[in-house]
Structures are given as C-alpha cells and as structure tokens.
Image (cartoon, rainbow, N blue to C red; front, side, top):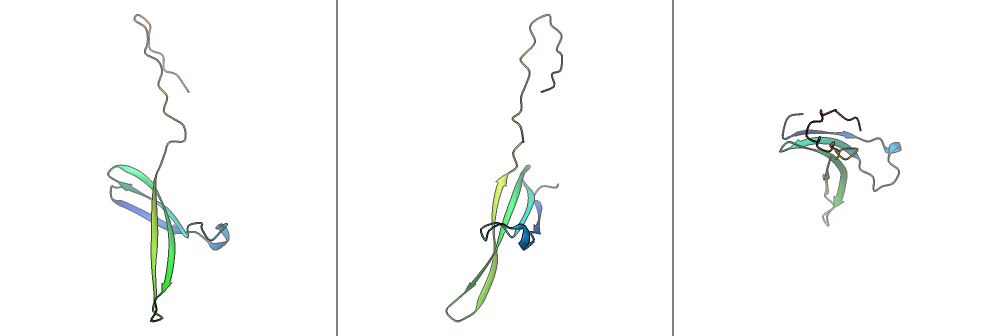
Length: 85
C-alpha cells in the first residue's frame, strides 16, 4: 500500500450486531504506519429541516498478532542458530 492512501468498504447491516458498530471498515497507510479505519455514517437534521450527512472516522494502528521475540545473543565461540518461536 502506498503512503497516504487507504480505502473503506461498507459493512452489510446484517453483519453489524448493534447500532454502535461501524458502517464501514478499511485500512490506510500514514507516514509508513498501517492503520485500521472504522467509519460511521452520521445524519443530522437542523432546525430548518435540512438534513446533512457525514462519515465519522476512527484510526487504530495495526498491531502484530504476537510480540516480536528475539533470541538471546550467542556466547563467544558458539554458532548462532536461528530459533523458531
């Protein structure tokens, strides 16, 4: 994914469990960091009866599913053997 790009995809009504669940989900890349995007379609009517719509967005950094683990440094004279975690 190129930096400063992203996309949203609508979530079908039947897949949303409550009214608080997002109406759209997606991902984006900002300054080399990937984020999940959640979007909610909002509607509001003013005193004159005019209706306005907008999308409210929330960004959450994509985290690795498991913390990165590194092998302890090899002792002098020992060969480094790659570990599978």
